[in-house]
Amino acid sequence: MKPEASTVEPDSYSISELSREFDITTRTIRFYEDKGLLSPARRGQTRVYSPEDRVRLKLILRGKRLGFSLDESRDIIDMYDPTHGNVEQLQRLLDTIEQKRAQLNQQLRDIQSLMGELDEAEVRARAALEQDARN
Image (tube, rainbow, N blue to C red):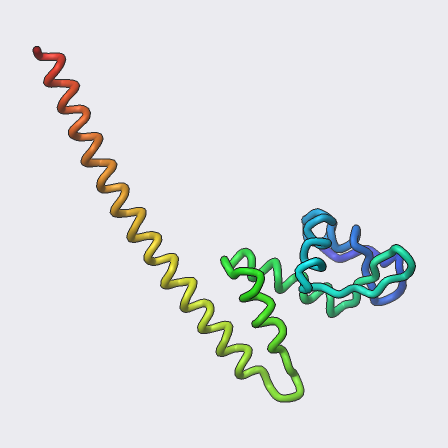
């Protein structure tokens, strides 16, 4: 979806434009501001978001979908330095992905174990009901 022309100024976005583009509430965007993740300019009471703010918001939302905390996303995004290459940023991203994958694999094992315990409890409960029905 291509963003509509900005009502603020060329090469900038209003909070409502970003809200519509990313299908999030303006409150969510203000929350990210409060956390120091976004720093829009101000024209009186109006927030004016730059293309860089838009990219940061896109990366924050991507990190959220990947299960990254806001601090993890901030750390990775803040490492961006095109003048010196992004080896450190990419390595941090890979490390965070590896940690998330390990965490999810552990959660998956825990869920599978719990499912096994539920299956066993169900079998015992059904056997007890059948036993009671026979008596």
